[in-house]
Structures are given as C-alpha cells and as structure tokens.
Length: 114
Image (cartoon, rainbow, N blue to C red; front, side, top):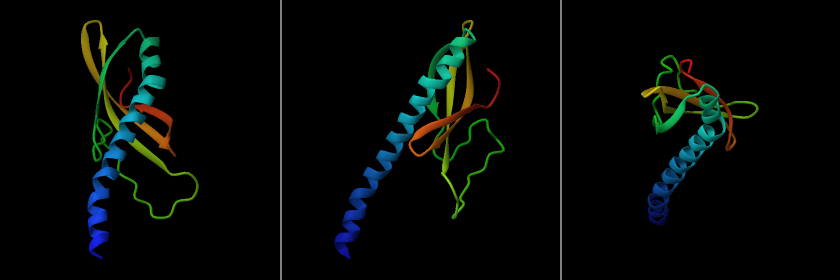
C-alpha cells in the first residue's frame, strides 16, 4: 500500500504536466491551422495567445462544463484560449473555443466576430 501511495505521488505531477503540455500543443495547432489563416484573410496580424486555464470559459459566459458519465460516440473536449491580434496598430483580444476529438483539433469557434 505504501509503495502505491509513493508511486501515485511521483506519477501525478508528470500526468498533470503531460496534460498541460498537450493542451498547449493543441492550442498552438489550432492557432496555426485555423486562427492565423482567418486573421490573414481579414488583413489582421496575429500577436500572441494566452491560455485561459482549465476552469475558465473566457468570453463564452454561458458555457458550462459537461461531466456526463456515460456518452456514446466520440468524446469532445473544449479548450479555451485568448488570442491577441493587431488591427491597425490597436491590439484586440478574442476568445477561441477549440473542440478536441481524440487528440486532434476538430473545430474552432470565436466569442465575437473578428
């Protein structure tokens, strides 16, 4: 029992770090594949992003976390991130909602129109 507790206490930080690293990788992938081309199409310049965190919905105020115990089909996870972009020397912020299926980006929604 004691070795199980020690093993769990050693593995838990690595599991948390792996989740955070995977989330950041998925956000960067969504920005590179979806957000940057959309901004370039509208003659806007991408500046940076800031991850909203595990429990934040950003500007999607009415979103709630889905904790369904039994789901059929593929499970979808949503990651929220703030994207900063430049519009004629003014930096603006928008929240993106990234839908993840498996370990890939499925869809990206914007909190406001760009």
